[in-house]
Amino acid sequence: TDIYQLGLVFYEMVTGVVPFLAETREEMKQLVLNEKPKDPSLLNGDARPLSGLILRCLVKTKAERPSLETIRGELARYLNMECTGKLNDARKTGDSRIIRYLSTQLVMANAYSNQPRPCCDYLTLLRSYLPPGTDQLHQRIDSTISIITHYEERDLFAAHHDDVIPDLESLAREVAVM
Image (cartoon, rainbow, N blue to C red; front, side, top):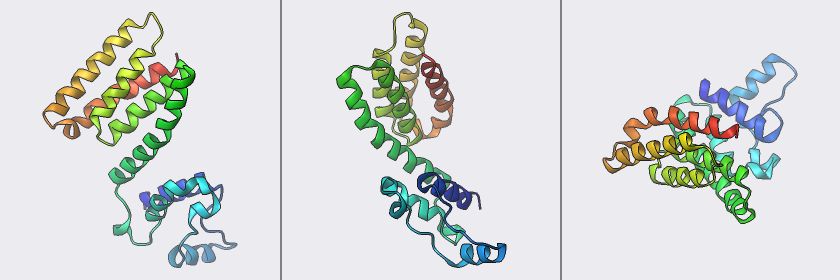
């Protein structure tokens, strides 16, 4: 039921409406049990990249719903796709604050989808756009890159993924307040 509920939240987030609307509790029950929700991309064209995932979260049979790991990976790939274009635009204008923000988003997206190489690449980019006087943060980024590279070279990144994520989240929070 948690995946189904997550699908309900995603649906409402991207469409602005709930997937089922009824006047009574019994009507709602029948809709939930027997009807398929309308494709979110029909209500919001921008939802197209996530529509399939959202609808899979809302399938009636629990065994057919995606795992949390699958959801996390698909959302990370979507975020990666969305942020890459915006990052390229920000690099053209030289807006270091936006570059730092998008770089941290891409670091996290790639870390969550078990992509250590791009994660390190975006950490390196992030490092190059830090303001002066952030030597300790530079050192933390360098250390994190070394750790990720160590795991990647030994095909251990996925196994140590949960060890790396908290440090990356901490880095992202620190950069966000700059």
